[in-house]
Length: 402
Image 1 (cartoon, one colour):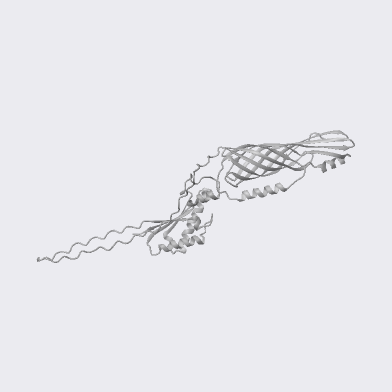
Image 2 (tube, rainbow, N blue to C red; image 1 turned 135 degrees about the vertical axis):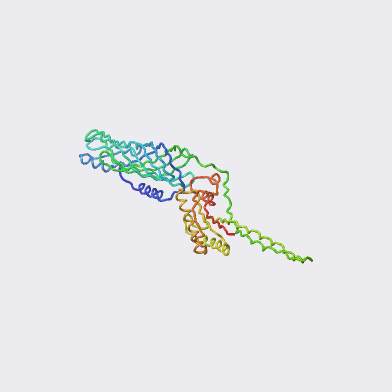
């Protein structure tokens, strides 16, 4: 068998892309099992066999090769999250063989049977809601059992040699999610094999698999038509001061000996405290995607807000950052805090607001505006990201004084 590096290189590149990408949504924590059937192909090293016979004084006049056979694999694994899984299995690569005719007259018939066990790290990257790209890298412990039969002048020292050896394996493929309870995979895999008589080479396997998850969480409820709530910006609200109290004019003096006392002055009406003003800024208008640096467009919006506050009296300005549910909860919490702090820093530095009157807090994904039934799905795509846009926001509340 001879080496061929094309599949190995493509598999490594594919797996590298999978592991380098960030994970937007988590869908893991379950076991799965499956069955794979396919076609295996090897390369019989005719030149080495001919040279070996020549060393024994035999000349090869003809050779027939059987380089393909059926294969199967039984496997099980654990899906850690949407992008990574561990998988172990038992595989059988089938039988391969050759028949060599020699001079002096004789024949050498050889066969090899290959099976073993494997342990792989499987990477998954979604291409759409149902299709995903697969890449795998792992180790396999294969058993090679050779059988040789001779006639005429041909001779062999050991007609039934056996060898067990640990070698790497690689794979690349596609997965289609038929339902939450069944996947279909199409894969190309390469097994590095050492046979029992010193040959080294690769066996390529092209297979179709059925995968059955166990204990996977149900899909979120599907809505007939997503209807994201509208974004509303609340206009500034200021309380006008109450008018000055009027004093009743004195009445004409009555024709009495003592002057009439003036009437009491009416007490001024209490001035109501201004209602808190709450403004909702879309995070997509303030920041670049997945960033916490205020963009030029965001600075313009915050400048207008700061200008509205000039001349107004207020006790405190509260800044709250919010994210959507895509990504892990710790990551979203940290992103919301960084965005709230960035808005606070800009209001202080560019808006002239006293730092002591501004507080910032991150709420993460804990207070969404959208509803799960309206924004369905767990795989990140353009439609889902757009539907969850209202959840990505920064809210600023201004509490006034009397």
